[in-house]
Length: 47
Image (tube, rainbow, N blue to C red; front, side):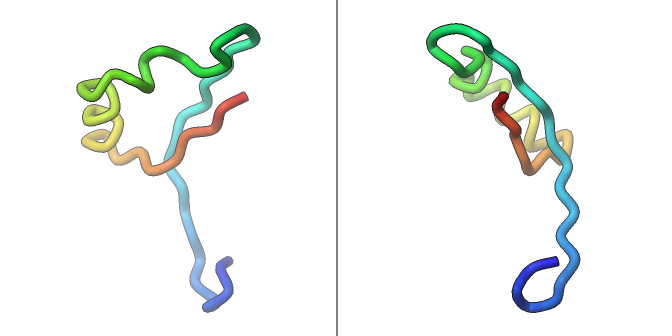
C-alpha cells in the first residue's frame, strides 16, 4: 500500500547475474524492453 492508501500490484521479472556487468544484456535491448512492456510487466528485480 502506498502513502495515499492505494494498493499497488506489480507484474515483473527476476533477472539474476552473478558476474560482471551485474545486469543481463537483454535489458539494454530496446525491442526486449518493449516486449516486456507489451506483456504488461512494470517491474524488474535485479538479483
